[in-house]
Image (cartoon, rainbow, N blue to C red):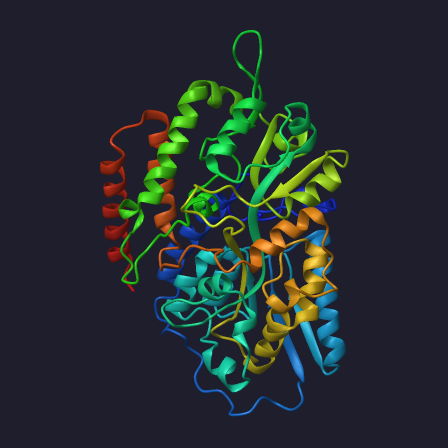
Length: 462
């Protein structure tokens, strides 16, 4: 979901059949910038604003409601098709769509009082700031009144759409990470099946790695650099069932034996090949969301990626013989088959002039099974309803099945929201980047990570 300015969530590549996703680091950078602005521009809001709602939902919907979303081109047409269904079911309702609106535009529109009813964001990192500031209304009263079954939403998605008991968003499709592997390269190396453990991942990766006559890397089995493509603490967290924050918001990273073991495994992997060799090889690879993606060209045999990669491959490398499998885990700690999930979230803007219509539209997008299936089939993301994940109407091939199963796995996890846009993720990533290059006393490094995160969270406030 290429590092570019934070406003461009979709590049010109979205004019093809493949959706363009912002990388985890880019989502985080955008969220950090946005939440800083939110604190200033919506400072006068109260948490969960919007006032009382009618005791019963209106029997008939009538009027105009606006939807702001970030999709463009082909993907915007998919969303439009879903909206056409809503208008058909409610013939006296007109939905005004503002497509191509990134989170910065969304936030500015809300804070300036523009006519905006429903906002759809591409990152879960805004939830803490939008819920606590009141930029998005508290949906709890609507959910309770209409007896919405939140149990149909998997636990991880329920977790990332609320903040400290305030549910100001609902999920509308998600991105799930898993392992992608080159079947032809596996067969040539005599590897019969994808790795399930980190030890197997490393052994297979070293076997698949080839070198040029000068000793430089020719092809890489798996790139262990934590800042390569979708490699990030979030996407690697399923490897060790990684936990982030305690209930009081304090960091758990430095206290976790799992994180220590994962960083030790990764550092040993990097050192065995050589940091400088890996960096030189990586610098010559194509951009993640271009046709020259290293997995698509065969330069990297395995990588952690999202379900959307299949759409890129179908468009840019249709002859690639590949498979998907759950993320390998540290034996005895991780839950094989689980994954990391994050995705799109939608809420009702604090200044909505049509909150009942906004709620009806939001409920349609987020809780209607057939709508979720249609959106998932068109956008190739994973649904955020269990009923949609198991629907016979969902188009599921062998490779997509891995992501669907992971999305439904009870051990699939996410990262908790904070008011500063989950800045703790960047703090951890920065420390990890330094460690993979320079090493050091890992216990002290992670202890400092905890201290830095705790200080930042205290400064950010509730």
